Amino acid sequence: MEAADLIHGNGKKPPPPRCRRWWQCSTTAVTLLMFLLTNTVSIVVSSGAGPALLRRYRPATIRLWDGSAALLADLNATQAALDASRAELAGLYARVGTANELLRTLLDAMAARDGATEQQRELLAAAGGDGWKRELAGELKLAVGPLHLLTNARHGRNATGDEAAVFPALGHACVRVQDDLERYMAYTPGGECPADEALAHRLMLSGCEPLPRRRCRPPSPKGYAHPLPLPGSLWATPPDTSVVWDAYPCKNYSCLQASSSCDGCFDLRRGREKARWARDDGALSYSIAAVLAARPNGTVRVGLDLGGAGGTFAARMLERGVTVVTAAVSAGAPLNSFIASRGLVSVHVSAAHRLPFFDRALDIVHAAGGLGGGPVVPGVMLEFALFDVYRVLRPGGLFWLDHFPCSHAQVNATLAPMLGRVGFKKLRWNTGGEKEKNQWYISALLEKPMA
Image (cartoon, rainbow, N blue to C red; front, side):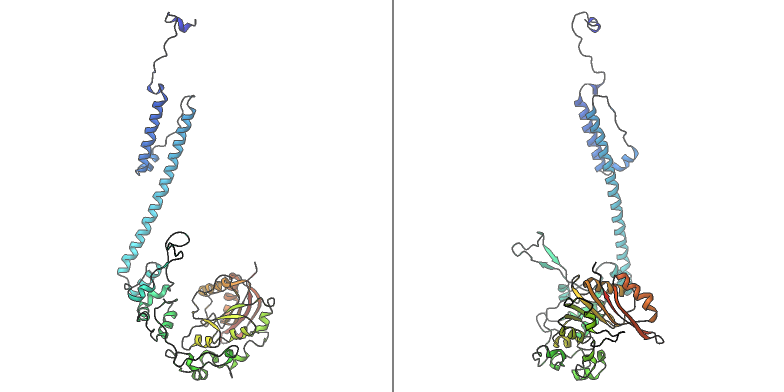
């Protein structure tokens, strides 16, 4: 027998010793302790007091006796989870703080609007909020409301399975001309539209573009007759009965031809229109033939003419098999009606409007005398317009600046670097004018790089 058996003198093994500490008796007690500890910590963390307590006390890595490696791993994993929860709560508190700051800024702006002047309210409207000085009503309220899509007629839902709504496009500056916009939308639904073309032009030039759609029929010209067929319509003066003249000082084409409107663009028989872009002088005046020769034959197919006046550039290009859309605004003269009567396509948009074409859709863009709205000061707004031209051109597409006006100092100091920043590559570049009068012009043929 061993010495431990002889202590009792009965030849039997002694009973196992009593547990000196309660946690030595069973792992069940330890598991219960850990269950209570983790649940208590979870309650504290979810109640919002977690970060404060965890900042005051960070438990050290717990080490137990050698035979409890699995339990030690569980404890250390719990500690890691607590650390992660603390970081998550800290991030949540930061986001809540940011939201509070944004809410406070919004409330301050709303409070300022109550006592703001008309100009201050316009600035607040531009910064955020709807900005209308009166609650919308009638046709205007309906026109700017959401359009619910039924792309899946069976379920009334879109491709994602959610009900969809599209809000009509409306120029953000319309809030500044609400009085005029309400007059524009004052009509009898289902009836004839008022003769308010001049009002529509005034709204567009005020930045309220695009205008909302209306539920009325525009008046037709009295005695309207079918147009001439192509190609004869390209160079024939349309009949006066093709236009509603209410909005214009002249009431017929004879008056327009005798006036200085659009530099003689309405005189198709005797004026300079018949000879435009036919000859290349090697300087500011480029010919259409020379420009088309800069691309492989037949690859210039569709284009846009900005500020195309009466559409003669589009007519010349159509004779060469190229379809060109003319951007024009009928302010003071019926340019869009005149272009349509010639058998050409026009879009009624101002120079500040985003070009209504998809990316990389056009082979050529032509800009004569500016970018659709006359001379433009080379600044950030011109840069926006040039980037928009770059957007709609395909790789390898041509941008033809035709007698672009600017001051002599701006040619190399402003405009040339700006065109480089946009990304255009120069194929031709000509400048000229009268330096003494500070009247200068640029003609350039630019390319959007292939890569």
